[in-house]
Image (cartoon, rainbow, N blue to C red; front, side, top):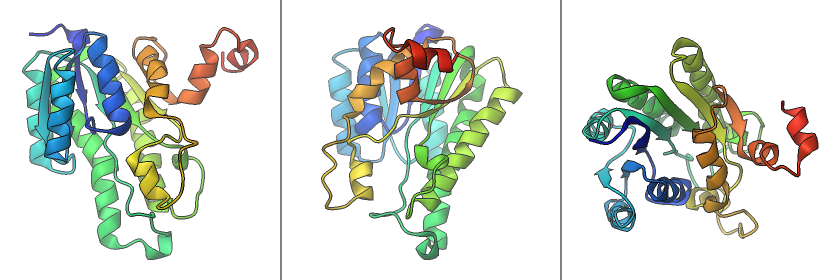
Amino acid sequence: MTTTQHNALLTGASAGLGRALADALARAGWRLTIDGRDARRLERARLELSELTDVQAVVGDVADPGHRRRLAQTAADWGLIGLLVNNASELGGSPPPRLGDLTHATLERLLAVNLVGPQQLILSAWPSLADSAVIINVTSDAAVEHYEGWGGYAATKAALDHLTLTWAVEAPQHTWYAVDPGDLRTAMHQAAFPGEDISDRPEPASVVPTLMRLVGSGLASGRYRVADLSARWDPKAQTLMASHS
């Protein structure tokens, strides 16, 4: 059985930000329970991560109640969960639809993955969360800005922000973070801009050191932008640090 602080449950960990974060957690000695919808890609991630730490991989969709229960129970097999990261997300189409074109089915899918999925996974894992557990819900700048074509996705992320901060009030024994990693060079971001060159976006691994520091930072529950945290923790950025103190 693992120690509490080194048992992590991470969704959407077969690619992109989730995969990069899983790698860093593995190198830091965390045991991992990960999921993804693509069985072959998830197995490849499991094999690679297994060279660094103990890994359990559960294929499935966070919109599926049965999958969420299996995922939470699998993580609990190693003891109390010290870190839960709700990273799996749904965009809604490529490119994502304007609100006037947003179908009922697409909106339901966005809600099921981006809002209901994290909320219900938290509940599934609840009996196994350590009192000191950190819960990270990955959000987006679209939750607070307004971009053409992003309305459906953005609405679910705005709701996720609200849910996260309400959890912080209702369950203060845990630490709750809604984290905006910024635009990254991921498959989902490419799907949002089909045919466009997104090579100017940073790689997911570039934000992982800040996320790792956040996990052990002791910062109060809240909504954070990785860009702000990186600047705050940069000893050369005294002015920006003071503005956030």
